[in-house]
Image (cartoon, rainbow, N blue to C red; front, top):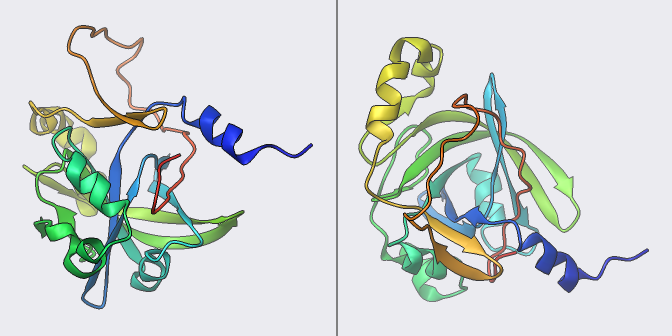
Length: 211
């Protein structure tokens, strides 16, 4: 039985996500696209994946660069999310006028992002109308501090410091049912466990629109 694409999109849109911009540096050409979900694959070794639409103008640059950065946006970076989701000269020629720095791979890390993951591509798989990029983490952190892959083997030694430098007054930009959302401060409740687990959410990326 064929599944209606619009209905599938609407159902998947009921999964609330954060918003990220995936960026790459292809021989000096900076490129990026808005991604409303990406997936953590493994803790040991640290692996992530993103899925990029086959029609995306950003796809060949990510592939050729061999690396990318996932920038987790704050709720005051909605403008960047919109710019990197729109085919325009501002995006393709001026990198949305975004300030950035680099960590390990040379992929641009957006200044002021809530957090980032800098990773090298280790495999690419077909995924229907998307390409699936599996990548190994080389660096990650926040705008205040960077944790390199070399340090990931010593997390127990530095674990006490990780939560402290990731604390921030910034809130993430959220996306639900085709609209940007902000988290409310009115409800907070600890989860059952504080142990970090591997996420298994589906990942999709589109240039012109979110899932």
